[in-house]
Image (cartoon, rainbow, N blue to C red; front, side, top):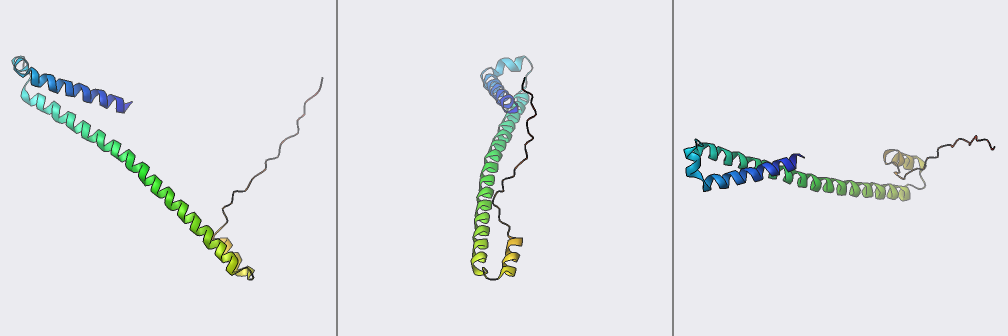
Length: 124
């Protein structure tokens, strides 16, 4: 909603700017001073700049999230390889192997079963 509002406002300010330049003598006669027009243009430019920065920030956030997700995926793969290596290296030493398993847990998803209640319907 805010994005649409700022676009509408920007378009209106641009129209006023163009009309002000085109009809400057008539506006001056009616009391609209060049300073007011300059201030309007400046405020419009500031709105456009802030809007652009906001859009750039959205894209940066997506990029950073993708980089983070890739790093997490890489770390999980490294952890899995480390655990597998420990399993091979210490296959005959259950004590050491247990230490590795405690600090590098296996992240396989475990299926949980939820008990279902028997249906108690009556046939009639």
